[in-house]
Image (cartoon, rainbow, N blue to C red; front, side, top):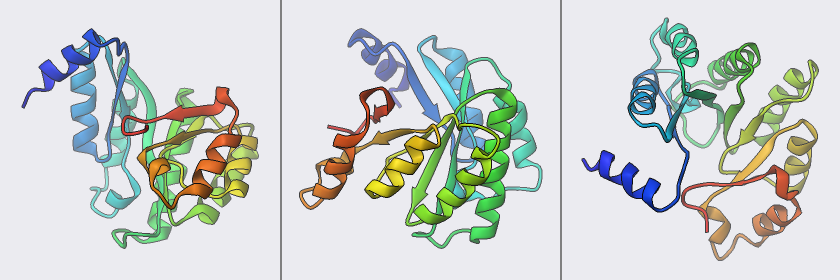
Length: 191
């Protein structure tokens, strides 16, 4: 309800760019509308893996159209999620492929959601990396060292969030410490 005030407070505090990430067609539309309304806000459009089952047949076509709007700076969230049982993995892979292909076509980075699906995500990423290094970010990275190393090798950035602070997450902190500073991103709820 205080969206405009929240954005104004962020700008006053020195935040010069904010990304609003879509997870469905409707939230992607709202992200674009918000970006058009505020100079410091930019949109990321896509259908997150947990929502691909609910997507209408032409929702992705509309994501393609939205992705070409001014101030859309990335594609996503996309990826795979084996934790929640909201969509068949085959359908998630299909949408993941489509998002990466769109990202390449428009020369925009993509944002990867990965939950309990590291080996599956890496398989998709490797397949797409056969055409050259990838341009994207592993959002809220929680994988192991081998996964981090391979993602970096494929050209991706790694982003860390609040899970880095969990008491029993020493392994994730060790992984984060190995990521080169120029490939490391932090998220809103990061320490």
